Image 1 (cartoon, rainbow, N blue to C red):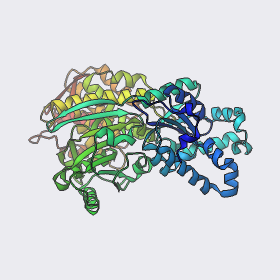
Image 2 (cartoon, one colour; image 1 turned 90 degrees about the vertical axis):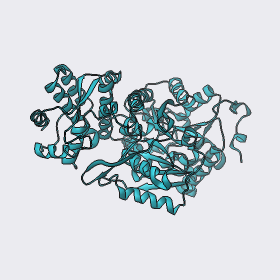
Image 3 (tube, helix red, strand yellow; image 1 turned 135 degrees about the horizontal axis):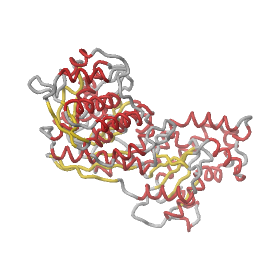
Image 4 (spheres, rainbow, N blue to C red; image 1 turned 180 degrees about the vertical axis):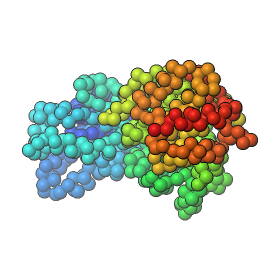
Length: 543
């Protein structure tokens, strides 16, 4: 049955260049129906409220639950989602739990961009009480509706965060609809990256994971390599793959040859051929494992990166460097493998906890110090360290931050694709950071180590050159403003850190190389640094 046959003829969407559906999800009372109607009028689309359609076909939802049970209702939702997936030009307002079902995410993401509306418990309760048309809501029958809303929001929050979110508190439906229309109708920002093996596009936008095939121009088999944590959030909404290889998650995971071998076996078991494209869906660890496999499986297949954290988006997904770790250190085994596309969906940043998001901002800070761009001003004025955030800043602000940061990386790697000169400046803070990670393996994540490494590099720059003291203070203040530390979490022996630095792959002829700063936006590389000064700097970052 064609759902649109159930609707008034004048509600059929007019033909347009982009008639992909827009799907609204979120908790009750966040404005899905109200905003959805305004958005449909704005786009010239049909409007569908899934709960209303179900009631028109099967009777009251409360009766379905009582007489047939919840599973019967969820089956009805799944059938409706599959039906709607065949339509185009529809704004779809879904029931509060409909998009918590991965099957519905898969169906509705095929031809639609999904946006989640959010509001505070107080606003939700106020709207639910005022909604006379839905006075039968069971939520109002409990002794403490506000507490029930708080508990349900907490329970569903991890699921809702997989979608691009917009706050509806104190904003008119017209304003929210205008924001969604802009995001749904506009293409992602795209930047061309020139490499010795050909050009590719870096795309950054919101709710674009379902369109990986189109954005990357994938014609053959599509194989997604991801990890368990990322798969739980995003595998269902990513372009439907021919095969998916899911790596273990957890604190003990490593980007090792063993993990690459696991990918090889899965590819061979699935009889994946050379026409395939491997898509890395995840953080930098997943990206390096997938890229190493893509570079070497059957002597090489196409690679697309879909980074889901900030470090991967603005740093490791661009430039073609691939590194695996050994017990001797980080990134000591590697090669170059350029992707054929990078697709950064900023909505994925919503599922990062505050610690990992802040860690990613250390790499943004690094790019700002290298390029003297507007990034530093954005970091100093934006509310990036709000632990209660759904997403720091508006979606547009986040997209702008990622776009500016990645352009710094693109410009440098295009100038020096094989790290023979200029590209070394991207290691600002990393000579220290990699050593910190080695000696405090269980305490620091990469971005936290980079932040302390940047502070150490700034202090070393001031000690050996003319880097202004006020700029050192500015950098330290920025690091702390971003929720990061300027000192190691545990006291470490300086000798152990020095020993770890001697295993750094940037050493040349036995001499340690450092990226330092003459000034903000003026980095340089040197191996002429007195070890005594280095030791003094290392003492200065001890707790």
